[in-house]
Amino acid sequence: GTLYTALYAFPLNLKGLILIPVLTKTMDVSVYGAFVIAQTIISLLTGISNFGLESSLSRFLPTRKGTPEGAKLFYSIFWISVAMNLGVFLLFLGFAEKIGLALGISTTTAILVGGIIASSSIFGMAVEYFRAAEKFGLFLLIVGGRTYLEIAVIAFVAISTRSLDAIFSSLFILAFIFAFVTTVWVSAKMGKPQAPSFHVGPYLKYSLPIIPSTLSDWVINLSSRFLIGLLLGSAAVGLFNPPYALGSMIIFVPTIFVAMLPPLIARLHDTGDLTIFDEIIRYTLKYFLMIAIPVLFGSLILSKPLITILSNEKIANEGYYLTPIVVFGTIFYGCARILLHVLQTKLKTHLIAKAWFVAAVVNAFLNILLLKMFGMVVAAISAAIAFVVAFAMIKKFTDEVHSLSFRGIAITKMCLASASMGVLLTVVLETTSQNVF
Image (cartoon, rainbow, N blue to C red):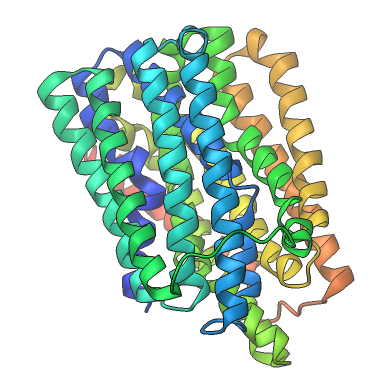
């Protein structure tokens, strides 16, 4: 279980970090910045073009799997996904030139981005069946395998051609193949495809609040790159992304656990096993903090040499101070992501939307007001503040609908132990006067 989940979570969350050495050493920083912006748009629209209905599968299918009602639920949601993503692709096709100009990419790449979004969203809806049916091994294998292939394809094409058009052409072909094969596979398991039912009100009521949540999450996590590109230029995005990616890498830790969390805790909740329900949430938070807090103290000392290895000395010198700020914010982001599963299970997704909306407004306000004057550090600080706000609100809402005990999560002890480690590491580095790498 945990090993397979780690193999899935590692590339999914660290893909950008893994590719930094390849892309920053083979591309001009402005071209790399354009690549990051295009990937940001893909990440945003892939997350919302399905109306958030993947979450409805994970919430409602576990108790209906293997039944006619389960098949009806799946196909109704799947056909909505197909229709919505066809519309997304047609929009990109019709406005490709304007989109390309806005993102700093070619018209061809803009069309390919639309195709990747549509294919990835349909793939995401199809593969969600395996998670909702609690076939976690297949889910992890398919999603993780696609991500590993994406990393390999991007690296190979970037080194071979140094062309954004070639990179996104390859990504579109890969996304389309996975969408087609997975859809056929799931259809074979679900039985003959059914005509869509339009009685999907309860599922939309559950999932629609997740769209503003996803948008707000994007505003905090990814829009900083878009705003930096808009206000400071694509080269600044290239300088900002490596330290930010390094600082946010710890998010893969909660992903190891939450990949299987939604259907599992939904079943435990619906069957009344709330003791195990609480223990799973509590231990997930504990294990995340046991790793994240030491990373925070380590980043204060090691961010510059690590960024130098990942990219180059120029990026390290201009952005190393961003990494600890990002790690600090990501700790609160990770805790919020774990706790919000309680609200999802309780069908309180509107509260999640409220928390992320407030946090996104705070982040956007600070960026728009201060980014031009003070530069990239504003993007990192505003994101950290927004994550603290989101966590505080989600924790408050969680306590109101289902109070959780956090006994056994000794945060003070973790901080003291991590600080001691940081002091020891600093002394070792100063006394040896050597590059430990």
